[in-house]
Length: 424
Image (cartoon, rainbow, N blue to C red; front, side, top):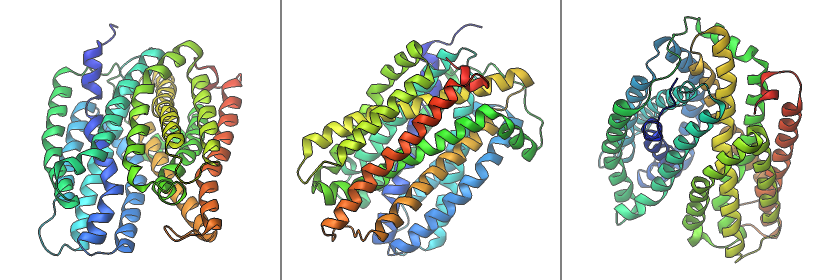
């Protein structure tokens, strides 16, 4: 089969840009808009965000199964972006005056449903675009590059588009739907079709059980989840770290931009390393880089702007590997299963994958924040003991979890049995 051109692969990955643009504001901007500007309170907004996110995570495997039965990945991506665009507009440009919890909950449900449907099918489609292991890594690289650009835009545009927070985020909401429409039209016109077109006819729980019976998938999913928790802890705590350890709150936006831009720029490097040494070896190398970087944070003090900027660049490089290599490895595992069964099962696999990703974020917050509270850290008002606790949870805990991930992946890739053990 002829390899799709770079232009057609870029057309496939383009919808990842608006999808990533939608993800960041939900966690960063929605609590401020509704908790402060609309007066619902941070506790209520936070509780609703958590409850709906858990519900969203639990339905992801069923969405994946249903998507496998429907097929037509491109139309399901387009269908998901429609409720996402409507919900995003309603969420961040709400009516003037009092807005209740029903408005917030309804718009969040639209956003979560649309985001999950589009993301699961975009990722599954990528796994079905090529039978070549290196080509699949290239496909993921293009998609994740667009995703990182979307995150950078979401982080910077609200401050550029408006004179204040509410105006900037409202204008971003107005911009989102036209941008999503353009990406969908380009995708529908130019993106290549999947090489697997036979739909799955399995019952939902039978399909999910079948995926979980795949030992290579179970091992990869466990390592991905553990590594995801390790990466999500510093992401959860970075603003506290910048404010209270470094005392550089005004530079937080700069640090975040360095982090995400470095992730984009590092993707070609990880692509080359994966071709040269294999995907598992490249992923282990990125884990070692992250371990060294987060160990460095333990020695930082107030005012260390240049050192932390370098840390953001290097940890952003490691982020590029985390975004590129695990989905590429998953695509290889799915490819073997699809060859055996001669049917498309990618949606079910990526539904479980999405569940693991969301649980990683929840576990990171559920582990790090109560731990800091138990160690007497109070944001903005902690003494030296609290600051030291923050530093060790921010840097030390990810080091420990990354080490566990590294040795688990090393043991897996060295195994003689199992498909994951013999991946290039």
